[in-house]
Image 1 (cartoon, rainbow, N blue to C red):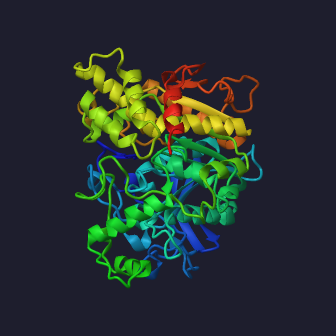
Image 2 (tube, one colour; image 1 turned 45 degrees about the horizontal axis):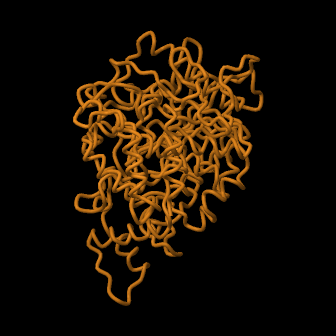
Image 3 (cartoon, rainbow, N blue to C red; image 1 turned 60 degrees about the horizontal axis):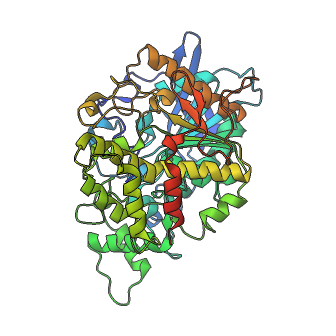
Length: 551
């Protein structure tokens, strides 16, 4: 189960930006005229934010489960002062309270632009562009979860223009019949249409369409990587930052057959009763007639359906958006600079907040569900070797030590291995890759989670507050060290977006490009970042052996 989730856990629900908008200038786009709102980020610099720009026609009625259609041009000036609504999704884990926007299937396909209102002295062709793709396990959240004013203060202040986008989620974004009726991947087609809109319009906002970086975390990281591979999207940007998620992660993509079976079974679970003569079109028509509320999903799926810990709807190898396997597409895709990495304890977040059995016996059952006899050659031996690798020096009755190992196993299998493998493959193919492990955390920055997590450490989402400026596990009230980390992270990210190198324009090379012959060498990010040779404590070779045995 993957999520960028519970993303503002512990924050109070607030109005967008907390104050009445100050109108900015009018910009004419291919879709029509829009007016944004002004954010003052320091004494003499202003960013104009254009929030909730529609980039597609409402995906309702006959357009539900279809590729997005570009928005028809509107006639009047559109005031883009507030985030657009979320895609339909179940409100769980306090998300109904924590999200600042409501849900509306008809109006959810929007994007946001944060444009510096000063000319770039270094980049006369326009500000380098960063496009943020939110996470949430492909089931939940929206761009509004990740802030506006703080994002402008952290990234736009570095001479960057930033875009964030919404896309369809859950059943709305990834349902498939496995044929021409509905191949799925609507959420990825949404992202692609948003990238095309940016290409065609971003110059009017002072951005450079020829210097675009796509970045995202968790499911957003997986999306970023997958977009760099598909022939429909890979030429729409130039650099990519997949964080804690990529196309090599087990959660990120399925075969068409597997996702089709889940989709059809779920339709029946919801109440669809096919007659013998009915086909996929009839099933889609039945689903189009249902209220959006019936079809909403969260990370825990629907009670009574599916397996625990599995996302119901994800991207699939559909034969169109992905005309070949991920392996083949990765080899043939144009090489892009990429910066990628994980936090030190990715699994901590999930182990602490899900119903995963936190015992040695529970981990045995997790491995039985994950390394199944019908999907892995020699599955029983692989499960035994995995348990031996992690627990050989642990008293299995010591709850604290067992939980630490469970956190490692969960994070390694679901996230860490995929990132490590992608970095290795891309470097071997000739891409310039920068791999990191984020170890920094503020023990006072966990809010209510401090009392829920089995221990404290850098975990899923921990790095985001230092890039985007918004609390993603609790309300962000930075101390002196946090401010140092904000500078470290925003320097790395802005340098990469500008130059394709997180070191920036300097002869000093703190962060070495990845060498596929030394796959565990990486930058450990603390208050004093340094190159290290033990990515995730050198545990990835085990999972390389496991995943090579997949049938």
